[in-house]
Image 1 (tube, rainbow, N blue to C red):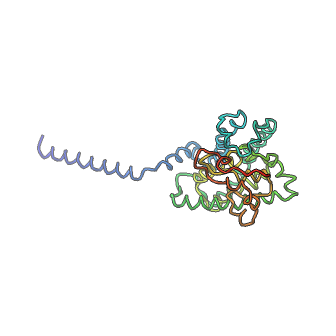
Image 2 (cartoon, one colour):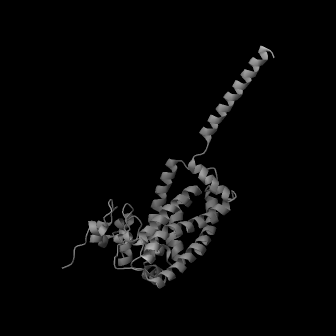
Image 3 (cartoon, helix red, strand yellow):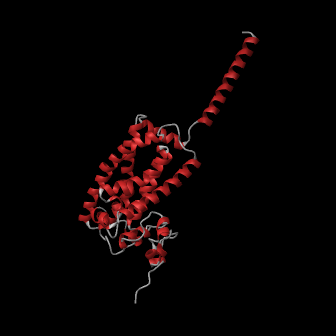
Length: 307
């Protein structure tokens, strides 16, 4: 074996190794992140079928969120456990324990809205998403900046849509025929967030959370993240529990108690239209804060007793 042959072989191995290492580096730099990999697995689970993941995927994911976020609150309302949660109950003399016949009635309506009405809405919304060009596959995944900006727009959309739709259903004619169902619960529990007439569910609940993603043509992965935030928020707002380190549900609980206050989600439009005046003048408003200790709102901000 000649020296020239050995040198040629060594150079060949060196070049092949260098190319392989360079290719590996490029592969690592161009490899998708956790968000992209996770969404890729979800997209493949639906056979990379845009219709299936947009309609049936969104529908099933929303239903799973409903079950997941209501599990803890349902357990506390029905069984009274964990006992420590009742320390944080807003209306301490209500739903202890929960009225079982009312709860079963609510379960039936909530399931109908989640399984039938929501699916119909997703089917009707799909052509609009196609027209808007909203992506749902591997391409078009938003950057962090784009996602933050779109989520902010979604929040403004749901505040406006929910506030004005909600106020519309408080018009006496509509309230009597539709919205009164939801207000059967003057002390709400998490499950009753979507306990309402199907027409109200579409106009007040589904449309406001979908209008932002439709306008912006957002990627479906971001829409699912948005739905996670919304379902958690509305479940918490109806839970009847003001828990530490979580957003306060005092404002919406006050709405169920008084009916004519706090129609919005975050309170911006209530302040603009002065539909929170009684709430702001009440002692309950002081409790509408993020609790940063394990003390309950009633312990930190006790209401003065009327003489």
